[in-house]
Image (cartoon, rainbow, N blue to C red; front, side, top):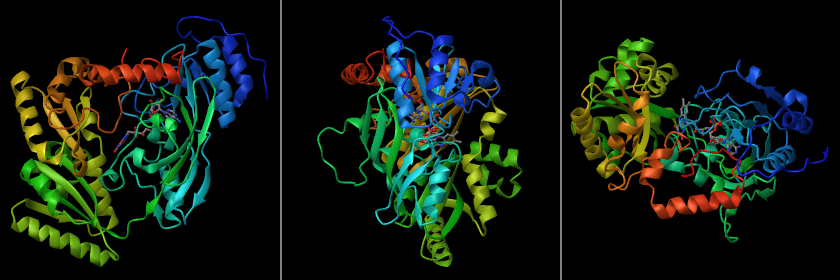
Length: 472
Ligand SMILES: Cc1cc2nc3c(=O)[nH]c(=O)nc-3n(C[C@H](O)[C@H](O)[C@H](O)COP(=O)(O)OP(=O)(O)OC[C@H]3O[C@@H](n4cnc5c(N)ncnc54)[C@H](O)[C@@H]3O)c2cc1C
């Protein structure tokens, strides 16, 4: 339905959405797909309590509706925050009063599934779990996996350039995405949904939206490369005495490795306490635990490879203890030790960091960090989980009382030495609001200037996710 466009009101900044705007937008998407502040306040906000603070949420049902909404908001200078599953960990989906939340959840169709080419074209609102389930029917997998799989959407995964536990084999979303359909801030639709890996057709202008966290445009459809599904898995939870031992172990792992996750002993102990995993409590007294998963043509072959690796590692003294999962329940328990958030329930008000370090520098980085924290404030506790194979560590700092307000003071302790070691202060969760100050502090002036110029080009009125990612 084409509606007459109200005359734009020229103002230098975005303006709060009005009841007149909401009435107009309601006619674009249909009243059933509009939620007002009072409705939003009753809904689960997702990871961040501020995700539902917008004055209004729209759930358009097609790319054309997204385009019409953005064209209107661009003309009226209304701030728009794209949202997927609201599982993002950097505050990128946070909304404020006066803003419009744009949920892509209704674009939830797997439109093309091509097992021969191992590709799919999906709407931005398709969840990772839904794509994985569809792929499994043809012996394929999405090539990415993470704990928020049931809620995280493909649009969100693309927009945060998500990584997860399979990134060391299949890359982050930047490597998974073949093509995109995106709607720019003024409603322009750019359809670049190619389904091949090889494509050199000039500047890949749509690909800048990968990792842009909704600041350059709205992703509406994604062409994604799939991978062959893993065969049967064998899983072990092993204790290691030190980080140098953990890093050294990664060299001994073969091509059959499908997951290599790390947890500090205090994290594992907290989860074991919370979930009553008493048979794993002794293991959790080690400084670090590794979750090692391997695959082979048969379950027996996978277990043989795993046990042979474990024997060698024990003999070399790199592994000091370990358990092998004998059934799916035990395997799930091992993964819960890695993925459960007991630490945050036990000590609310902690600070999360998401860094990556080359494996060769990982042990030195963590040792230096521990020393800095001890010298600065011995009451701080450090908990670590991460995707070891990528050198990607999720660090939680907390203390007996909440330390959330101390981010600016503590972040430099965490980021010190990272760039010099060739690492990153923002590995896989994105910048959002949380890491913007860190980006402003650590990214080069040249990069920051280019980011501002690109933002002005893609979104000249600054309506998309204002205040996030792009340094002022
Ligand atoms: C338990 C748990 C485990 C996690 N594990 C991992 C992990 O291992 N690796 C990892 O990388 N991340 C992980 N995450 C973070 C999170 O799942 C990812 O950031 C995910 O990609 C976000 O998807 P979403 O649909 O929830 O996006 P949202 O949280 O809704 O949005 C995230 C950002 O993307 C933007 N956005 C969303 N959809 C669109 C769209 N269609 N177009 C434009 N912009 C859009 C939003 O504006 C926001 O800036 C985890 C989160 C949880 C809760």
